[in-house]
Image (cartoon, rainbow, N blue to C red):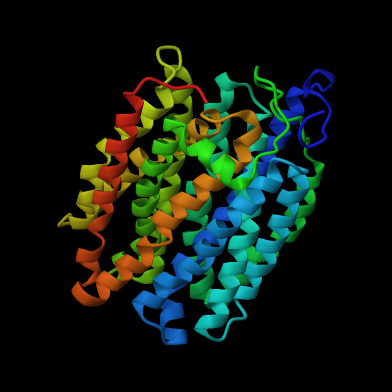
Length: 417
């Protein structure tokens, strides 16, 4: 028996169709996940005027989600390495969907903050466990493409969040946007219960031992794996920059560039869906192909893409004309999304099979604690003092740090966990 009480891998055969069905459902959930997450960005200026809050408080609304998200991730990660992953994911989807709809009922800043915090708890159950399940659907040589498919929901879902949020806010007000994207998720929670749950490690050659370490022992094990540790450090810098840009870009375009909010939402959404979709798919494909030449392919690809993204990110925030800054924004998004699938494959592949959900949970905790949990309010606080045009220039600095860390660890000789 495995640590979860599932049948041994030798007695379980996962049909190819079941694997692809599971990938499709989990990707659909991730799509709705990112719509729910980014719908806030599309309506932030209207929330500010309606509730009478400042830029720093707007940044804190993101924290309402992220703080609960990363604080509860380790808890769900431990459960994900022991209990039924499909049932935990289903419960998380139901929780975040109800909380998203409840965000539209908020009449004050504390009420909206509390609703967004509850969204974070539900998404923590989903995000920590899904990559572990995907790793048991597909063998190592196919994981780059599988993870790219899963994470393509990030740019597409974020884009739909901007586009749908902008359209619904314009037609019906910002509250309607939260109702429209939250309530359908309850049906998706039930759909999750129809996907397969294979034994842990079925696609890997290593045995899956009984997991009897405490959370602190597991943490010590993880930080002694250089590939895991430094990948997460670079990921935190990446999340700081990309998360801050995602939250503030519509407001930046409206306030600094003079666009109407609806036009800004559509511009950000359109660029994100095209550049993000292309970058995410190409990143997964290239990562798998480059494995033929080096087992560090995913790290090299992610690090080099981040380094190449520094200049276009700067141009997107400083370009003097509309074609220049839009072009910079498109190229920056394409390059930054190249690493979405590969870098998460590195995280689950660098650790023992029995610790994958825990490793993902610790990663989520770290990248949000030091990443997009602090970058939106930091940018907001700087904007309150020197203006938003200068405040956003912290983003390309974070991208540069990420690129240096990832290429540095890629150049090291791999050490097995």
